[in-house]
Length: 96
Image 1 (cartoon, helix red, strand yellow):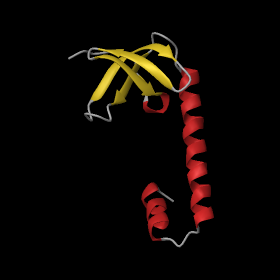
Image 2: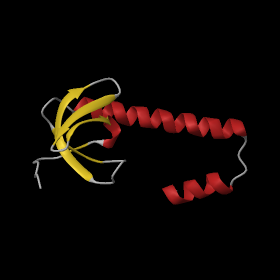
Image 3: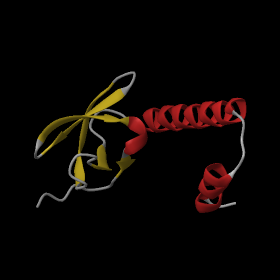
């Protein structure tokens, strides 16, 4: 099943409230696991990339701090506190 089929099954399905709650819990668990996996691979000074949810821009910077919920990233635009699951490592930073 791909994501579109899963979304369609949820939207058009006849799931009970308990079944939907179970699906939500599974998604939250998977998101938390992904966040932890990304955090384990990051360290201060790593170059990272993310897409701003405010502007939709692709932003690149370097890790300043890895905290419990967020990673602080220094960019040309300033400091950003970004959820770890939104970050991906990059080799080199190219400033525009």
